[in-house]
Amino acid sequence: DAKTTQPPSMDCAEGRAANLPCNHSTISGNEYVYWYRQIHSQGPQYIIHGLKNNETNEMASLIITEDRKSSTLILPHATLRDTAVYYCIVNPLGSGGYQKVTFGTGTKLQVIP
Amino acid sequence: KAGVTQTPRYLIKTRGQQVTLSCSPISGHRSVSWYQQTPGQGLQFLFEYFSETQRNKGNFPGRFSGRQFSNSRSEMNVSTLELGDSALYLCASSLVVTSTDTQYFGPGTRLTVL
Picture 1 (spheres, rainbow over the protein chains, first blue to last red):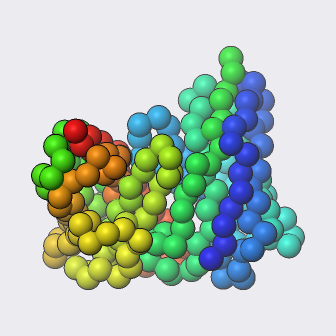
Picture 2: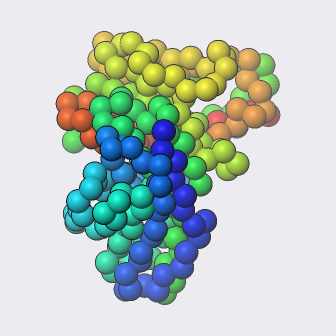
């Protein structure tokens, strides 16, 4: 099962783009990349997921490298409310829960006024 | 549509006691997973239930158990509580119709064992 590596913390100025990297060099062909975030004392919130193409939704963009060994979550205009811990995980298709995935400690993003 | 709800939100128990936590998934969701989150270990998978059957299980001792009812609501039980069981317990539900398994988490139950 693929594991992910993320920097423990990052700062971003309010209004600027926040680019959060994730390394998943052992990802398998059937594993999606998911991003979640967790605001203090709340449950994790789904942000976006992708397989190999770049994805965009109302919250963020996900850029996956061609070899799929790394990805970047982009928050285009960070606000103070985006301050949270961001988790990057990989999971096989149709696996029924993230049973073999440890969310780990993620990246703590601090948005600075 | 209402989100995942968990009760109680906060709980204080003493060592040796047992505790039952409840989770109501999003309407229509059939898969419910449970996670334990501690500062040192991050978020770790406990088990997953689908159609009243435990489908997957994480690496936790037998003191941790769960069940799912016909309405998809789920409970988890921890017996003989230890100090190390103090954690945020999260429940997540998913639709399991598509293959992407996007999970929606509840707010969690904060368990403190004294």
